Image (cartoon, rainbow, N blue to C red; front, side, top):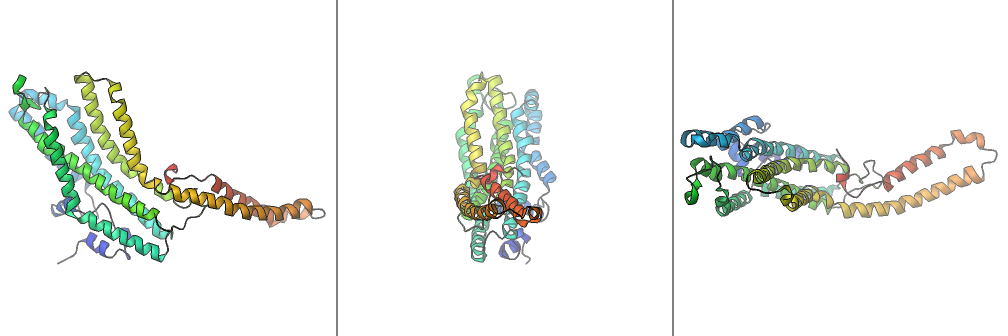
Length: 363
Protein backbone atom coordinates (compact mmCIF):
# COMPACT_ATOMS: atom_id res chain seq x y z
CA UNK A 1 0.00 0.00 0.00
CA UNK A 2 1.39 3.42 -0.96
CA UNK A 3 2.13 6.04 1.66
CA UNK A 4 0.53 9.49 1.13
CA UNK A 5 2.95 12.23 0.20
CA UNK A 6 2.31 14.25 3.38
CA UNK A 7 2.97 11.19 5.55
CA UNK A 8 6.25 10.53 3.79
CA UNK A 9 7.25 14.13 4.29
CA UNK A 10 6.39 14.13 7.96
CA UNK A 11 8.23 10.88 8.67
CA UNK A 12 11.33 12.24 6.94
CA UNK A 13 11.31 15.58 8.72
CA UNK A 14 15.05 15.93 9.07
CA UNK A 15 15.62 15.27 5.39
CA UNK A 16 12.74 17.14 3.76
CA UNK A 17 11.74 19.88 6.19
CA UNK A 18 10.19 21.98 3.44
CA UNK A 19 7.47 19.35 3.05
CA UNK A 20 6.30 19.64 6.66
CA UNK A 21 2.98 21.42 6.94
CA UNK A 22 0.75 22.51 9.80
CA UNK A 23 -2.13 22.97 7.33
CA UNK A 24 -2.14 19.88 5.12
CA UNK A 25 -3.52 17.27 7.46
CA UNK A 26 -6.34 16.20 9.73
CA UNK A 27 -9.53 14.18 9.14
CA UNK A 28 -11.29 16.93 7.17
CA UNK A 29 -8.29 17.40 4.91
CA UNK A 30 -8.04 13.66 4.31
CA UNK A 31 -11.77 13.51 3.52
CA UNK A 32 -11.28 16.19 0.87
CA UNK A 33 -8.38 14.20 -0.54
CA UNK A 34 -10.55 11.08 -0.72
CA UNK A 35 -13.21 13.03 -2.61
CA UNK A 36 -10.63 14.36 -5.07
CA UNK A 37 -11.07 17.97 -3.95
CA UNK A 38 -7.42 18.32 -2.90
CA UNK A 39 -4.32 16.87 -4.50
CA UNK A 40 -0.83 16.65 -2.95
CA UNK A 41 0.49 19.57 -4.98
CA UNK A 42 -2.74 21.42 -5.74
CA UNK A 43 -5.29 22.93 -3.36
CA UNK A 44 -7.89 23.20 -6.16
CA UNK A 45 -9.20 26.41 -4.62
CA UNK A 46 -11.70 27.19 -7.38
CA UNK A 47 -13.25 23.73 -7.29
CA UNK A 48 -13.48 23.64 -3.51
CA UNK A 49 -15.01 27.13 -3.37
CA UNK A 50 -17.59 26.10 -5.96
CA UNK A 51 -18.45 22.94 -4.00
CA UNK A 52 -18.86 24.90 -0.77
CA UNK A 53 -21.17 27.40 -2.46
CA UNK A 54 -23.22 24.61 -4.02
CA UNK A 55 -23.63 22.93 -0.63
CA UNK A 56 -24.28 26.00 1.51
CA UNK A 57 -25.82 28.74 -0.65
CA UNK A 58 -27.54 27.14 -3.63
CA UNK A 59 -29.93 24.92 -1.58
CA UNK A 60 -31.21 28.03 0.20
CA UNK A 61 -32.17 29.50 -3.17
CA UNK A 62 -33.78 26.27 -4.40
CA UNK A 63 -35.71 25.55 -1.19
CA UNK A 64 -36.98 29.11 -0.95
CA UNK A 65 -37.99 29.19 -4.63
CA UNK A 66 -39.89 25.89 -4.31
CA UNK A 67 -41.45 26.22 -0.87
CA UNK A 68 -41.51 29.91 -0.03
CA UNK A 69 -41.48 31.86 -3.29
CA UNK A 70 -42.65 35.09 -1.67
CA UNK A 71 -39.49 35.06 0.44
CA UNK A 72 -37.07 34.64 -2.48
CA UNK A 73 -36.54 38.37 -2.97
CA UNK A 74 -35.64 38.80 0.70
CA UNK A 75 -33.08 35.99 0.43
CA UNK A 76 -31.47 37.50 -2.67
CA UNK A 77 -31.19 40.82 -0.81
CA UNK A 78 -29.97 39.33 2.48
CA UNK A 79 -26.32 40.42 2.58
CA UNK A 80 -25.80 38.47 5.83
CA UNK A 81 -26.15 35.24 3.87
CA UNK A 82 -23.99 36.40 0.99
CA UNK A 83 -21.28 37.76 3.29
CA UNK A 84 -21.02 34.42 5.03
CA UNK A 85 -21.45 31.97 2.15
CA UNK A 86 -20.26 33.80 -0.97
CA UNK A 87 -17.45 35.89 0.56
CA UNK A 88 -16.25 34.56 3.91
CA UNK A 89 -16.20 30.85 3.02
CA UNK A 90 -14.03 31.21 -0.14
CA UNK A 91 -11.75 33.60 1.74
CA UNK A 92 -11.23 31.01 4.49
CA UNK A 93 -10.31 28.43 1.86
CA UNK A 94 -7.82 30.88 0.35
CA UNK A 95 -6.45 31.47 3.84
CA UNK A 96 -5.30 27.85 3.96
CA UNK A 97 -3.05 28.46 0.95
CA UNK A 98 -1.63 31.62 2.48
CA UNK A 99 -0.90 30.00 5.85
CA UNK A 100 0.69 27.05 4.10
CA UNK A 101 3.00 29.25 2.02
CA UNK A 102 4.04 31.60 4.85
CA UNK A 103 4.61 28.87 7.45
CA UNK A 104 6.74 26.78 5.10
CA UNK A 105 8.78 29.81 4.03
CA UNK A 106 9.58 30.65 7.64
CA UNK A 107 10.49 27.08 8.58
CA UNK A 108 12.75 26.81 5.54
CA UNK A 109 14.42 30.13 6.38
CA UNK A 110 15.19 28.98 9.93
CA UNK A 111 17.29 26.15 8.50
CA UNK A 112 18.89 28.08 5.67
CA UNK A 113 19.89 30.96 7.95
CA UNK A 114 21.40 28.55 10.53
CA UNK A 115 19.51 30.17 13.40
CA UNK A 116 19.82 26.97 15.45
CA UNK A 117 22.73 24.68 16.10
CA UNK A 118 22.39 20.93 15.59
CA UNK A 119 21.03 20.08 19.05
CA UNK A 120 18.50 22.93 19.01
CA UNK A 121 17.42 22.02 15.50
CA UNK A 122 16.88 18.43 16.60
CA UNK A 123 14.71 19.67 19.47
CA UNK A 124 12.59 21.77 17.10
CA UNK A 125 12.25 18.80 14.76
CA UNK A 126 10.74 16.94 17.70
CA UNK A 127 8.37 19.85 18.36
CA UNK A 128 7.27 19.85 14.72
CA UNK A 129 6.73 16.08 14.79
CA UNK A 130 4.49 16.48 17.86
CA UNK A 131 2.52 19.27 16.22
CA UNK A 132 2.10 17.23 13.05
CA UNK A 133 0.73 14.40 15.19
CA UNK A 134 -1.74 16.83 16.76
CA UNK A 135 -2.64 18.11 13.31
CA UNK A 136 -3.56 14.61 12.19
CA UNK A 137 -5.51 13.72 15.34
CA UNK A 138 -9.30 13.56 15.10
CA UNK A 139 -9.80 15.00 18.60
CA UNK A 140 -9.21 18.71 17.81
CA UNK A 141 -11.57 18.67 14.84
CA UNK A 142 -14.11 16.71 16.88
CA UNK A 143 -13.84 19.38 19.59
CA UNK A 144 -14.49 22.11 16.99
CA UNK A 145 -17.51 20.15 15.75
CA UNK A 146 -18.92 19.67 19.25
CA UNK A 147 -18.48 23.35 20.07
CA UNK A 148 -20.39 24.48 17.01
CA UNK A 149 -23.17 21.94 17.71
CA UNK A 150 -23.52 23.35 21.23
CA UNK A 151 -23.42 26.89 19.86
CA UNK A 152 -26.11 26.10 17.30
CA UNK A 153 -28.36 24.45 19.89
CA UNK A 154 -28.07 27.44 22.23
CA UNK A 155 -28.45 30.25 19.70
CA UNK A 156 -30.65 29.09 16.82
CA UNK A 157 -33.83 30.51 18.38
CA UNK A 158 -32.28 33.96 18.25
CA UNK A 159 -32.27 33.70 14.45
CA UNK A 160 -36.04 33.64 14.28
CA UNK A 161 -37.04 37.11 13.08
CA UNK A 162 -39.40 38.43 10.44
CA UNK A 163 -37.08 37.91 7.46
CA UNK A 164 -39.49 36.33 4.92
CA UNK A 165 -37.14 33.65 3.58
CA UNK A 166 -35.99 32.61 7.04
CA UNK A 167 -39.32 31.97 8.74
CA UNK A 168 -42.86 30.83 8.10
CA UNK A 169 -46.06 31.59 9.93
CA UNK A 170 -46.69 34.76 11.85
CA UNK A 171 -47.23 36.23 15.28
CA UNK A 172 -46.71 33.72 18.06
CA UNK A 173 -46.46 30.88 15.51
CA UNK A 174 -43.34 32.27 13.85
CA UNK A 175 -41.06 29.33 12.98
CA UNK A 176 -38.00 28.66 10.88
CA UNK A 177 -38.77 27.79 7.28
CA UNK A 178 -37.25 24.78 5.56
CA UNK A 179 -34.56 27.04 4.08
CA UNK A 180 -34.12 28.58 7.54
CA UNK A 181 -33.52 25.18 9.09
CA UNK A 182 -31.06 24.34 6.32
CA UNK A 183 -29.19 27.57 7.03
CA UNK A 184 -29.08 26.80 10.76
CA UNK A 185 -28.15 23.13 10.48
CA UNK A 186 -25.92 23.10 7.38
CA UNK A 187 -24.82 26.44 5.95
CA UNK A 188 -23.86 28.31 9.13
CA UNK A 189 -22.15 25.29 10.76
CA UNK A 190 -19.97 24.76 7.68
CA UNK A 191 -18.75 28.34 7.92
CA UNK A 192 -18.18 28.00 11.66
CA UNK A 193 -16.37 24.69 11.20
CA UNK A 194 -13.97 26.11 8.59
CA UNK A 195 -13.37 29.16 10.78
CA UNK A 196 -12.65 26.90 13.75
CA UNK A 197 -10.25 24.77 11.69
CA UNK A 198 -8.38 27.88 10.54
CA UNK A 199 -7.98 29.03 14.13
CA UNK A 200 -6.79 25.55 15.11
CA UNK A 201 -4.09 25.59 12.42
CA UNK A 202 -3.04 29.06 13.59
CA UNK A 203 -2.81 27.73 17.16
CA UNK A 204 -0.38 25.06 15.96
CA UNK A 205 1.77 27.82 14.50
CA UNK A 206 1.57 29.82 17.74
CA UNK A 207 2.79 26.79 19.69
CA UNK A 208 5.69 26.39 17.25
CA UNK A 209 6.73 30.04 17.65
CA UNK A 210 6.46 29.76 21.45
CA UNK A 211 8.83 26.80 21.44
CA UNK A 212 11.14 28.56 19.00
CA UNK A 213 11.29 31.66 21.19
CA UNK A 214 12.64 29.55 24.06
CA UNK A 215 15.56 28.12 22.09
CA UNK A 216 19.12 29.44 21.89
CA UNK A 217 18.76 31.38 18.66
CA UNK A 218 21.85 32.74 16.89
CA UNK A 219 20.76 36.38 16.89
CA UNK A 220 23.05 39.22 15.81
CA UNK A 221 22.51 42.71 17.31
CA UNK A 222 23.65 44.53 14.16
CA UNK A 223 21.71 42.39 11.66
CA UNK A 224 20.59 44.57 8.72
CA UNK A 225 16.92 43.64 9.26
CA UNK A 226 17.14 45.53 12.58
CA UNK A 227 15.48 42.63 14.38
CA UNK A 228 18.53 40.58 15.26
CA UNK A 229 17.89 38.28 12.29
CA UNK A 230 14.19 37.62 13.09
CA UNK A 231 12.79 40.08 10.57
CA UNK A 232 11.64 37.19 8.37
CA UNK A 233 8.96 36.37 10.96
CA UNK A 234 7.08 39.51 9.95
CA UNK A 235 5.67 37.66 6.94
CA UNK A 236 3.44 35.52 9.16
CA UNK A 237 0.80 37.99 10.50
CA UNK A 238 -0.48 38.42 6.93
CA UNK A 239 -1.46 34.73 7.02
CA UNK A 240 -4.08 35.64 9.64
CA UNK A 241 -5.61 38.33 7.40
CA UNK A 242 -8.08 36.01 5.60
CA UNK A 243 -9.43 34.78 8.94
CA UNK A 244 -9.82 38.37 10.12
CA UNK A 245 -11.50 39.40 6.87
CA UNK A 246 -13.94 36.47 6.90
CA UNK A 247 -14.99 37.01 10.51
CA UNK A 248 -15.23 40.78 10.06
CA UNK A 249 -17.38 40.43 6.93
CA UNK A 250 -19.90 38.27 8.76
CA UNK A 251 -19.91 40.42 11.90
CA UNK A 252 -20.14 43.64 9.91
CA UNK A 253 -23.07 42.35 7.86
CA UNK A 254 -24.91 41.40 11.05
CA UNK A 255 -24.30 44.81 12.61
CA UNK A 256 -25.53 46.57 9.48
CA UNK A 257 -28.69 44.47 9.48
CA UNK A 258 -29.34 45.35 13.13
CA UNK A 259 -28.88 49.04 12.38
CA UNK A 260 -31.25 49.04 9.41
CA UNK A 261 -33.89 46.68 10.76
CA UNK A 262 -33.72 46.55 14.55
CA UNK A 263 -33.12 50.17 15.44
CA UNK A 264 -29.52 49.71 16.58
CA UNK A 265 -27.12 52.65 16.35
CA UNK A 266 -23.55 52.63 15.14
CA UNK A 267 -22.20 53.72 18.52
CA UNK A 268 -23.83 50.64 20.08
CA UNK A 269 -21.09 48.57 18.46
CA UNK A 270 -18.16 50.73 19.58
CA UNK A 271 -17.12 48.47 22.46
CA UNK A 272 -17.61 45.22 20.49
CA UNK A 273 -15.58 46.75 17.65
CA UNK A 274 -12.75 47.68 20.02
CA UNK A 275 -12.87 44.21 21.55
CA UNK A 276 -12.73 42.63 18.09
CA UNK A 277 -9.69 44.74 17.17
CA UNK A 278 -7.90 43.81 20.38
CA UNK A 279 -8.60 40.11 19.89
CA UNK A 280 -7.41 40.17 16.27
CA UNK A 281 -4.21 42.03 17.20
CA UNK A 282 -3.53 39.65 20.09
CA UNK A 283 -4.04 36.50 18.01
CA UNK A 284 -2.25 37.73 14.87
CA UNK A 285 0.72 39.43 16.54
CA UNK A 286 0.90 37.38 19.74
CA UNK A 287 3.34 34.79 18.33
CA UNK A 288 5.78 37.57 17.43
CA UNK A 289 5.47 39.32 20.79
CA UNK A 290 6.99 36.17 22.30
CA UNK A 291 10.35 37.30 20.91
CA UNK A 292 10.24 40.78 22.47
CA UNK A 293 12.13 39.84 25.70
CA UNK A 294 14.85 38.12 23.66
CA UNK A 295 15.25 41.08 21.30
CA UNK A 296 15.23 43.58 24.18
CA UNK A 297 18.04 41.69 25.95
CA UNK A 298 19.94 41.36 22.66
CA UNK A 299 19.71 45.11 22.06
CA UNK A 300 20.91 45.98 25.57
CA UNK A 301 23.83 43.56 25.35
CA UNK A 302 24.70 44.73 21.85
CA UNK A 303 24.82 48.39 22.86
CA UNK A 304 27.30 47.53 25.60
CA UNK A 305 29.47 45.13 23.60
CA UNK A 306 29.55 47.13 20.38
CA UNK A 307 29.94 50.30 22.43
CA UNK A 308 33.17 48.99 23.91
CA UNK A 309 34.56 48.04 20.50
CA UNK A 310 33.47 51.41 19.11
CA UNK A 311 35.18 53.21 21.96
CA UNK A 312 38.48 51.39 21.41
CA UNK A 313 38.40 51.97 17.68
CA UNK A 314 37.46 55.63 18.09
CA UNK A 315 40.30 56.23 20.58
CA UNK A 316 42.81 54.72 18.16
CA UNK A 317 41.44 56.80 15.29
CA UNK A 318 41.44 59.98 17.39
CA UNK A 319 45.00 59.50 18.57
CA UNK A 320 46.35 58.72 15.11
CA UNK A 321 44.49 61.26 12.96
CA UNK A 322 43.64 64.06 15.40
CA UNK A 323 46.36 64.18 18.05
CA UNK A 324 49.31 62.90 15.98
CA UNK A 325 48.36 63.70 12.41
CA UNK A 326 51.06 66.31 11.86
CA UNK A 327 53.06 65.41 8.80
CA UNK A 328 50.64 62.60 7.80
CA UNK A 329 47.74 64.62 6.43
CA UNK A 330 48.34 63.47 2.86
CA UNK A 331 47.99 59.84 3.91
CA UNK A 332 44.50 60.30 5.38
CA UNK A 333 42.59 59.89 2.11
CA UNK A 334 44.20 56.47 1.54
CA UNK A 335 43.96 55.34 5.18
CA UNK A 336 41.63 52.38 5.82
CA UNK A 337 40.73 53.58 9.33
CA UNK A 338 38.25 56.22 8.13
CA UNK A 339 36.13 53.84 6.05
CA UNK A 340 36.32 51.21 8.78
CA UNK A 341 35.06 53.72 11.33
CA UNK A 342 32.25 54.79 9.00
CA UNK A 343 31.21 51.17 8.36
CA UNK A 344 31.27 50.44 12.06
CA UNK A 345 29.18 53.53 12.70
CA UNK A 346 26.52 52.24 10.28
CA UNK A 347 26.45 48.91 12.09
CA UNK A 348 26.00 50.69 15.39
CA UNK A 349 23.16 52.77 13.93
CA UNK A 350 21.43 49.54 12.87
CA UNK A 351 21.76 48.35 16.45
CA UNK A 352 20.41 51.56 17.98
CA UNK A 353 17.45 51.70 15.56
CA UNK A 354 16.53 48.05 16.00
CA UNK A 355 12.99 47.39 17.20
CA UNK A 356 11.78 44.91 19.77
CA UNK A 357 9.31 42.95 17.68
CA UNK A 358 9.52 41.55 14.12
CA UNK A 359 6.05 42.83 13.22
CA UNK A 360 7.50 46.32 12.94
CA UNK A 361 9.10 45.21 9.69
CA UNK A 362 6.51 45.21 6.90
CA UNK A 363 6.99 42.67 4.14
